[in-house]
Image 1 (tube, rainbow, N blue to C red):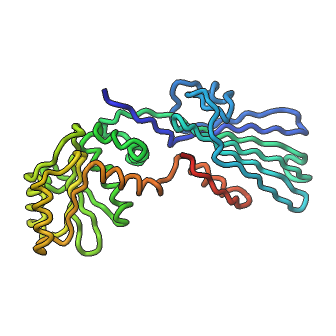
Image 2 (cartoon, rainbow, N blue to C red):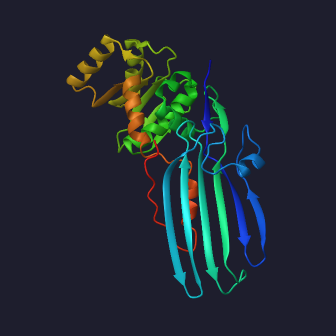
Image 3 (cartoon, rainbow, N blue to C red):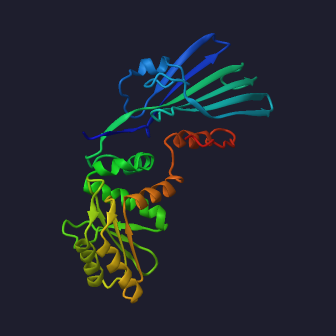
Length: 299
């Protein structure tokens, strides 16, 4: 059975403003993205620190307090980030307590903003799943790669190799690629990449496919290549051929990356991947003063 991936990259914002001099509340909801299983009204009423899907108290990954003091205007802001260790749901609470003697309000006021994740569900075998979302989930659970569509697997490796090699990676974009799926544009000598997604975790990659890639490299006048596969290992003849060509100087660089090695690369590049709630964090810097927030490691 194909597993689905849950995406929390979108968010919606609910804002409450309490104006003491007018003695009334105003609810100003704005929402982005889709919400699954819960109505917006139910999420508005839910505790900001409780996951509405797992019904558990979330981990507090950051809490800070900021002060400002200017002529006729001073106040305090409290910020808290919450993260669900079970499903990845997140939320942010931002509260202002302001004292002012001029302007529209004229008196003290309190404002509370809640940013909450929304939930989307994607079929692993469909090509519509966002690559960033796929990379985030596969980094946490590499075995999901066995279920990805072959085309989406190429997109995933393209994204991963951009971070791993720290350069541009282009997709071949041809149905008959002749053994090449990606070009790693490293300096003046591109690396030719072939990607194979195997459903069987015990698969062994045969030497015949390695020869296909080597032939494509010869046609493209290249001595640099990488064969990536979700197979458990490459056959002995595959390793023997690779080592012989490197020893004789017929190849400058040639890697055979199996499932285990690919999982290591995912873990390495995944450390620098942006988290969904960073969109909210970036918005905090657009306020009237600058925050300094250092989020703890959330997993």
